[in-house]
Length: 474
Image (cartoon, rainbow, N blue to C red; front, side, top):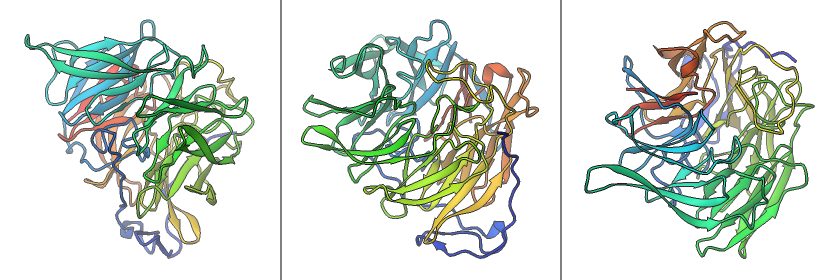
């Protein structure tokens, strides 16, 4: 298949109001209402918008914080490590979970969000036990600003930071639970999230889903043979925990000390992995969203051979609300979900330097990276496309409710990517898809965001992980 080039769509009809929150186009695109909706704050997480890779427990990729002002400065922190997870605690310090280029060792970094540290911007660092390529990528900050992560030794860790009497910052890891009896040798945790009762849920690459209870008990359930989990997991105030395997979307809950599968819904995984994706199946961490509590619906993007489809299901029951083709070719990124609006970014053809073991060959082996970002609104009649943009997003986009902008990094260069491509920071208007801010970034391949998620801090800066470190804007 070939990726689809996008265009901004002109409206052709008036549409009904979407679930009492937002209206789909009724006239010019500039008349589209602001995107809005509730975000659910999990009491066992750190600050809303900065405690998980996708912002919150529901993986909305939405933040209540404003991003950088136009014309902000750019600082590059070379760390010799790729940094997919950047989080900010209530103390204003940034914690990064990165993978060292040399040896691919997971490493925790501590940063002062307001000032650079003594070495490469980091105040302290701590190496963890190595697992798989995706093992240890997903982590979160708890309500005591500790990084919660499962290392390659299958141990659930809480990594705290503190400053000694000598003025030196240090990171210390405490083992909360040994998961080696619940997770087979050779398997690694790929997803991690707390539920609203304080259970720490995990999913492994080979399809084990479980949780560590507040009493230390461990319960697990195995997904059907052959189903892998290549993305993180999400939780909601209704007690649900969403997991997307390479074959189906699940919602589970804790019951009598064990995980219970509420429902399973298979999706079209296509005939092979696509170029620009890291597994054969959906690239989505499931996104909870909705107009009342923020958890009425779940969204993922499938991997159909032709046009991929945005799938929206009703949480609690799994009832399919809509299945809408979106012209993005393929997506490794979690959709943005807020209120009645969903945004899907294309990663089809993105040149990842490596993929996880067992991902299978891409078909075709490579493709141009044309990019694209689409907005879809949920109405009483189902899903309605609102706009498609040609932006070549090179990172997981983040929507700010405070400044009404979609923040991302854009790849600059020909569709057939080269090591000479550049990158810039852009802000899009969620009402129209138009780019309203652009700031060039220094360097080329060394600053590749590699479709990683950004962090917007309470100080109005944006931190973006790259293949070699961190770029700070603002």
